[in-house]
Image: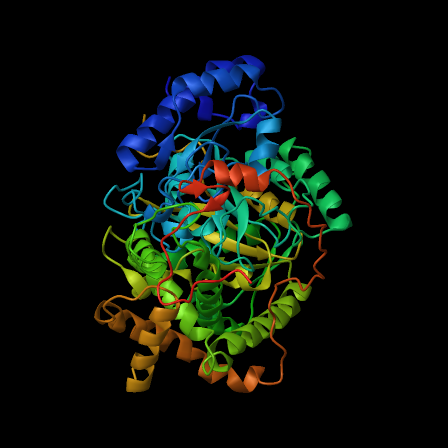
Length: 480
Length: 100
């Protein structure tokens, strides 16, 4: 039976099952590559088997799709860009090293929006990824391939989240996606787009698998100086392991939890999304949660502030791609011609647009009006959100205001509004999760919860509570 | 978009080394500027606040700058290396450096 291995979380697999289902997993990933363009690089069976047999540890038997902006030694890491189409990193990202050490095998590098700039999975130099629930629609982005690989009979994957790049595709494909508290996961080896916003994070089918994968991702790393230190990490990891081992009282986990939702902001989502959103909140109310409407109109400033900050940081981070040391190069008679022509031909339109606008927003004369003001707005939003989260444990929002658009339907700046709910925790550094809450006309959709700093266990517990009730983790596109 | 901004965008395109026909970007840049300008309406709320550059405002702990194998490893994936240096075309118009 094709789907036997999806009947229970990976953490419950026996040693025999891990070996037995290895090739089943690989076949599924091969299909995800061929049908849905989920991978930029898929490794060979021989490589996978060889690494599996020498692997050991709790994740032995897991084939892990890794987003193509996370460095993997000796394996192409293109960021879905022509600019890095020939780049094989000489080192592993910290998270990759950790996961290899506990037995996982990198099955391949997943498709994504170029340099993580996009929310549809369409800006990739390698062509768009397709939504497995309707191949004429986008799967969301930028971690499009990672989400699709999991939704299409996969188990877990690594993505990165700069403004919703894990949560939004997770919502569009009906799986779980977690954006960590800023500083909980080492960014060593993550190709930078906007360093003050982005974090590597997990996507998974089952909440217990999500907890297990995230447990390993949070291993400290002194090479990333922005990593948060202190007792929070140790306490959080203990809680994560308890969830992964199913040592929590699922029935009573959410009793007396107070959850806020900003109805005036939710009103901006499609009506069908609002209906499902409120159904999910009602379900939580029946479980014993208190649900309250809050005034959070300050969040309306998030989208503009986010895009200014992201573009300014992108403009700086992508200055390194000049054709000199590595990456794509067009040879020319002079140095400046070489740099200019390599960048014009090496970057896609969306990336160039963001570099230009980032340069503009941080340039002398405009910096105060745009960049500095956006940083002040960021503080204002953070202060107000901290105030809300001091009174409520979670803030609930739809993951996206719209259902997944058709391929080519939304392009460029017109699509930025899809990020309206997801950019908020990236500005403030809070953790957030997208949890599936059912289907509308055959397409999955998600609810997003923003939590207090270091309360990722609480967010995953929410998923644990809703699992099997509002969504079926064993449900896969295409039947069988 | 104001005429001043158009000229300025051209200047920015030169600075970020993406100097191509601005025509294809103008319409999208206009839309992005409209989004940016939405922050104007929040000026009263934020004018006295200090900027927040980093979400958690933690002090950066600098680590020792130790020379390791990284440079050698990076050079292994670099083409156009000669004598340990990355070769690139000449920068024309710059006076050649003379040994004292």
